[in-house]
Length: 281
Ligand code: C2E
Ligand code: CA
Ligand code: CA
Ligand code: CA
Image (cartoon, rainbow, N blue to C red):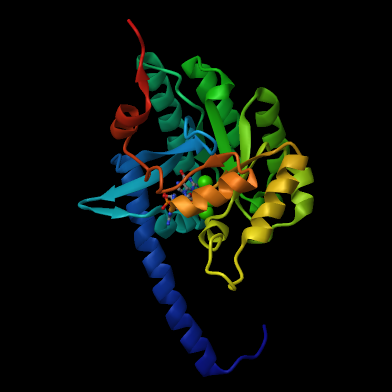
């Protein structure tokens, strides 16, 4: 071991203790949340840029802890670190498939629903089998579900994530590359991953329309869309909040829009009421 100053060690340890105990309590509560059914899926519509018709929805995890709602950004990273993302992710798959089955019984034209997958879920047990088994068990075609992954799935040394993605894609499940343009994105990933959709990260949409003279992200967004289209990928813009952003994205040829401008993520009942049409009979 390296010789380190005593003070440095003590300081480090105190901070770590605090972090570890914070994490432990959250971990315990997450475990309890799973057992006691405190999770819920919300659904955010995705609409065609040209005419606003519903073309899909993203399922987003919500945790109701008593009266408070804990946002996913605050617990997904912990769940990933401690491995609980695997059972939580299995719950998400089961819940999404169950919801789709229920909607398809009652409604016509239920669009594909996208679920988020963490890199850690590609370790054992295989998430691709879990997804395909769930759909098979429910008697649903693979076209009803899509998955969203981030580029970091490529960096995962433990798993066979690319093989699993290939299996999903071959079975007919759409794969979207989330948060595109952030993190460790490398264009070479686009060749290695069997994706059909690029989701441009919210940060680029935020700076898309800026005052004259300021440096906006328009040139970048334009380039991303051109590149995606030349690879025959569809483009989703995330976090679209203003009519000006929508107009710019339409002009740039973006295919699909997701964001508060159209709708926040909605509870299942509200989503169905607002966006799904009843079957005739
Ligand atoms: P994400 O996959 O990038 O999801 C999009 C996030 O942007 C969602 O936050 C959504 O509510 C938010 N959003 C959508 N439109 C707008 C907008 O117009 N403006 C702004 N400011 N935000 C918008 P949310 O639901 O809090 O989720 C945060 C992140 O948590 C997700 O980011 C995803 O990385 C993760 N997450 C959520 N559900 C799951 C899940 O079931 N499994 C896994 N592994 N991760 C999940
Ligand atoms: Ca996502
Ligand atoms: Ca995203
Ligand atoms: Ca994200």
